[in-house]
Length: 138
Length: 271
Picture 1: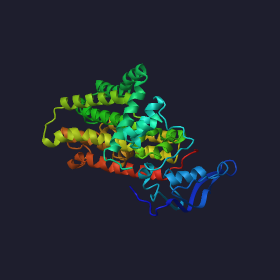
Picture 2 (picture 1 turned 30 degrees about the horizontal axis):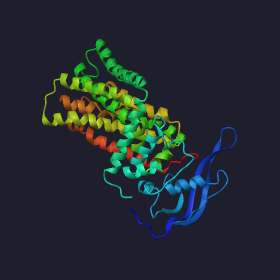
Picture 3 (picture 1 turned 45 degrees about the horizontal axis):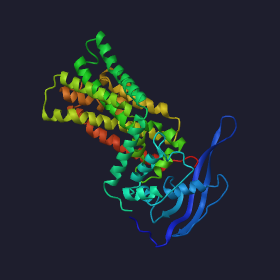
Picture 4 (picture 1 turned 30 degrees about the vertical axis):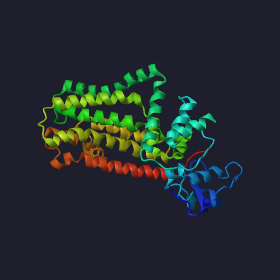
């Protein structure tokens, strides 16, 4: 697995930017495109063992930042490294090492018992059976 | 955490198993679906039989020859629809956040989406398509050579890959235009209808576009010519009729590129 470039640096963002193109009404039929930055020039460094809160009002760009850190969204500009990996290019390797919870609607399997969902995710994250059983007991 | 080489495959198999159990949870409904789903494919084949009730030839092809085209088209489409067809639900995956969830897991996004929503009820259609294909090939009086014996197996596989690529490539468009389902359908279901007949029945720019611009002639028409040992009535050299597997590989490469492009430009919604 990827060894972090520095021993302690877990998250590193430099000049991170994400912009979306939105269409704004201009008159009855005409719309023009407008580029809006959801995240504009974020610099961030989080070291191993640090606990960090990231707060802001609705629409401030918190989720957008997290989606760039986890490889769901491709940044418009800037650089990101998480655990020394590039989130978009090395998404699956990174996903094995991190945990992410959004207000997520679809992490569980609707038709199956909860225990089965856990068991499935055990396979997805390659957790050994014994370790999985031990964690369930807790 | 070390990733054992088999780990990824085991994970995919677990996803498939979950999908099977999910669907079997409502057993009666599953059986009804299984039976009901044969319908569409049966009608495609019946249409051709009805046409031959009023004519002895279709675009210069006899019933037995046309059935080779129909069988290939029916099997290839039904199987691709079973394996890859649910990708046309991309807009829903975007809305519900399933695409985000899938991107946060350590597996490929496309295989996860396909396996988590695999419509097992469509198995019956694929099996019916296979039966038509086997019957048609047996009845066509093919002059068997080793190359044709190989083609009889490779051509259906190439057809599945080709239709699968069309499904993926057209679904990718909906990363950009969320309500583009109808455009995709014109190419997927339209392509199925197009490949059910010898391309000689179509004319002009329409044939040029679908058959060669988009490549649908290589799903069933050209492999059928090669198997039947017929020269192309439209005058293309005979090696073209053996090109189907190559065309399928190119289509798959283009679809993969389109998918990657779509994922990189995915905008996500909410949290």
